[in-house]
Structure formats: C-alpha cells, structure tokens
Length: 118
Ligand SMILES: [Zn+2]
Image 1 (cartoon, rainbow, N blue to C red):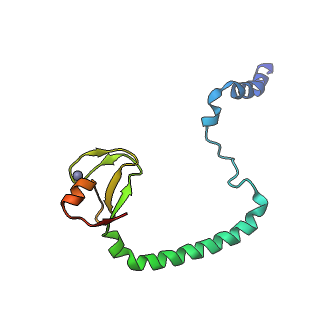
Image 2: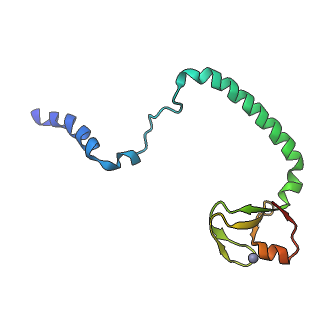
Image 3: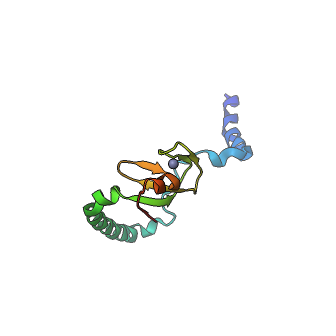
C-alpha cells in the first residue's frame, strides 16, 4: 500500500526536470489574458463582425473580375511556377492569379503580355 504513494511526487519532479515541457500543448490555457473584459470585447467584436460582413459584401460584387486579375506579389512560401516549372523561394516576386489559380514568374508573364498590378 505504501508503495503507491510514490506516484504523487514523481510526475511533478519529472515535469520540472523536463526541458521539453514547453512543447507540450496546454489545453487549459485561457484564451484571453483578461477575462473580465469579455463583455466589452464581445461588443467590439460584434461591431467588427458587422463591418467585415459589409466589406465582404461589397468585395463580392467585384470578386469575379478581381479574381481573374493578375497580381505581382511576394511569395508567402516557396513553391514552383506553373508556367516554366522553376522553383522560387519565400519572398520571391511572383505573378499570381486567383481564379483559375496560377503562379507565374515575372519573366513568363512579361513574355506573354500578362498585365499585372502590384
Ligand atoms: Zn515562368
């Protein structure tokens, strides 16, 4: 019976000795550091939500033409150009079209006379 008692102290000791404990996901972590402001933040979030909905609505009206437009943008992650198969790194300049989704390099876009905007 006395042997079972040892369990109490050993997990805590192991926790303190483990350098990797920061990597373990903590489910019980509070979402907001200041829970008392929940009421206020709910209202402002509601306002934001409505604002976003309005923006989305007006954006949707332009969506088809915006989606088919080419944009000169910086790559968020490395990848490969659809035009020539060249690889590009993160932060590289790419010419991007949303619909149908395609990533081209500036060279190919220029050669094919693609009009893109920054
Ligand atoms: Zn290319």
